[in-house]
Length: 275
Image 1: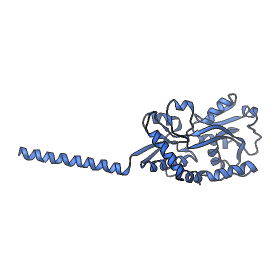
Image 2 (image 1 turned 90 degrees about the vertical axis):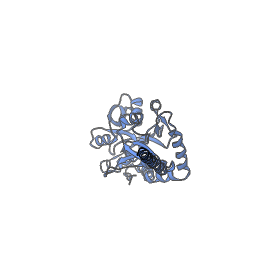
Image 3 (image 1 turned 90 degrees about the horizontal axis):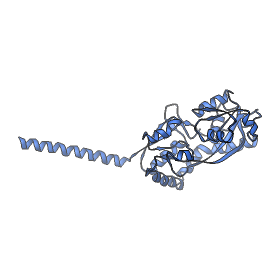
Image 4 (image 1 turned 135 degrees about the horizontal axis):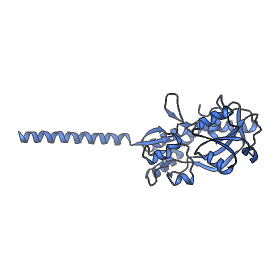
């Protein structure tokens, strides 16, 4: 009986090992999971759809990178102020969220090669005399911006005397601009064009020239993570095979043409680049 029980236990043990081996093989076959953090509130780069799913340029880029690396994307939304702490705490493996590369952030995370170049713009009511080329105009008007972004950091540094109104989300900043609780706003160009294409933004326009501050968006990972090199290779791959251009065209072709029309006429409202 003792021998029989030993054989039975041995049989059970082998069966469990086989099951574990099968599960491991299945996981390897379907690819590892890459956990991505994004904001979900920065259209057209990232936004939350009515059904709760995430969409936007960043989301499509993340999925394209996962496909190239033969990994499964798991993308979650995170409030902007907590997005770098979330990465450092291990809530996700990378941030794909229109994040600008800055010296301050480079002290906390490692960045991949850039995947988008950004400019800043001012917005105000179409009939407003607000002229951002005149520094006294900026200092004498209330200016909205999203907190902890390159827009607010630039405004604070370039115009420390300005009456700055900082908001936790871009949506709240646009809400106060559209409600005329602030006179003007500084924003990344494409989210500004996105908002101008809405009903709330229909009476507003870009003011002045685009502001080029050599701002580049990149993907953030934890320092020393080998994922940085893997993502860089996949970024190069999707740029070489045309995938990047397809995604860029999907979101930004209309925005670019609308910006040109706005500059030439200062009257037309740009269409929604995410539609």
